[in-house]
Amino acid sequence: MRKTLLVLGGSMTTAWSAVGKGFYDNIGVHPKITCWHAQAWRHKVNAPPYSIRDGALHFHDVTNNSVFFGEEDRHHPALGSTESISLNDVSGIVFTQPTTERGYLLELFKSNFFVHSRMPQEQFRDDRALSSNPLSREVYYVWWLSHQYHVSRFLEELTEGYPAIPVFITPEVLPRQDQRGYSREFREYYLMMMEVLMEVLRRKFPVLGCPQPVQTYVRATLATKTAFAVPPPDPHHYSPEYVRAIADTNDFRGFLTRMR
Amino acid sequence: MPNPYANLGSEAFWKSGVLASSPFSIDSIYKRKWDILAQDKIAVAGSCFAQHVSHYLRVAGFNVLDVEPPPHWLTLETDTKDAVKASIDPHLARTFGYSMYSARYGNIYTVHSLLKLAKEAFGLFQPRFAVWEKEGRFFDALRPTVEPQGLDSIDEVVIHRNAHLNKVREMFRCMDVFVFTLGLTEAWIHGPSNTVYPTAPGIVAGSFEPNRFAFKSYGFGEILDAFQEFDELLRVHREDPRPARILLTVSPVPLTATASGKHVLQATSYSKSVLRSVAGDLESRCPHIDYFPSFEIVTNPASRGVFYQENLRTVRADAVEVVMRHFFREHRRLVHGGPNPADTRMDFELGTEVHDECDLQCEDILLESFDR
Picture 1 (cartoon, each protein chain N blue to C red):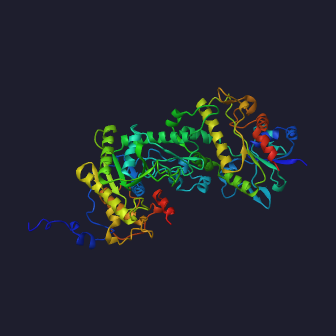
Picture 2: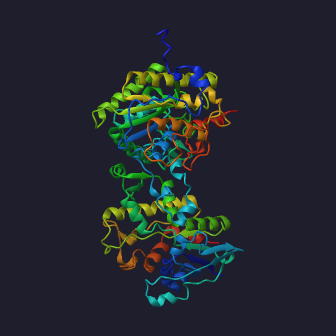
């Protein structure tokens, strides 16, 4: 019997639906994909859109607002499900929700807060740190909590209650080249911060994940290549090609082997 | 005049000034030397007791500098989203050393630490063994508690420290009034480099190596000289040619522990006496230096120890209110949000602004865990 891969999250799960059956056949899993509106996570402290009880994940107020692949996908049979999912049947979870959200990150960038980190294969840049307000990863995590508190609670419940189910966090996607509203400096900041977040989440929870695969963006401009992101005016969603690039990473392969 | 005491005020006599006077309202115990104006930029530093002073000055509407303010998501005031409320502890900013003082330097217990900080900020001093490690995390040895979990690498500590020093330099240059609470005379140092640490290596992080680190008990002359050197440093580097006005206080909080070999009571008495003498000497000679007697108000025998909590060390939050009431008699509050400054009753019904002693960040108290 095939292992069951549960894909959870907001509108990013659309891309995980759109990769098609062949993709899942190829990696040898049976997908279960569900999607909820991301806003539900932020504003419903006392009534989060899920609950875990009696070994199952139950959904409340699940709506599929993802229209980025066309209105017809709104009724995609894999999306918008409100059926409970028995966690006993789940072998592994791909979780697309814990992103930093570009709007929030831009605000952080403009406030000149900076987590000291290094770009891949680059040296530390002291000049940037000196002209900014350095943040520790702990304080950055609190920032992330301030708009993704539910996600942390969900991860906590999931990883503590079901430690045998590996959880893979998907990376964010840099703005595309034709999204010209973002400076090179912000793109650099974005890449670093998404890597820092992944690192912090891995430290806080027993989760797996990977940074944005290098073949999906142009190093010189730090812009995501056209094929890997949804065209403008979509703000930040990735494409099925991006899902394939993630699946091609050693981190994701490691996740697949850890699926129970 | 029959004798030189004949025309003195009641405050000059023990019987009228102490015995017959309420410890909650002591007349004439403090007369300001100069005013603090609404536009004056005030910087606050010192031992943990100074956190109270800093807090009360802010609440009273004074222009207390915060050159390293907390990110807005560490405070509740600027973000009322439910999610934030649910996740963020209102005291979180202080846990990370924000808004305790005018910069994120943590507690500065000794005058020598203050001097070294100023010298380092002005590029005149390079500390040694300034990064401590604990379980793979790295701490700024000169302010080890501002990042309770430490940082990821030595490089990161250095970057954070350099950014901090930039802000401290900016603060020293622009401040009009400097409020400093003298806390301790005992410190742990690296002798060859004269690096002074706020806590012994091994308490928060790092490890104690006897051939590298040494105990130091600073005497009156050393502390006086160090403070004067600090004062001179400020004069040289300030934007304003006029000297910064300095308000000194002595922390009434006894030592948690002493490494002097003396009894802790004796060591406390010695330490506070030396610090009080230094403050007194500076105040009597320097027109720009004033002394506010928080130490005397709290340790007044007439209070019979009521100002301390059950551990006989921690100053009660309501006692701080009493102390600051005396302060605000001379330096009028600019905002009247708290208890009436003129209220002289024994009134422990305080407003919500009270800054509980429990909230204070204090490395010294960590020593208590080593008490057998």
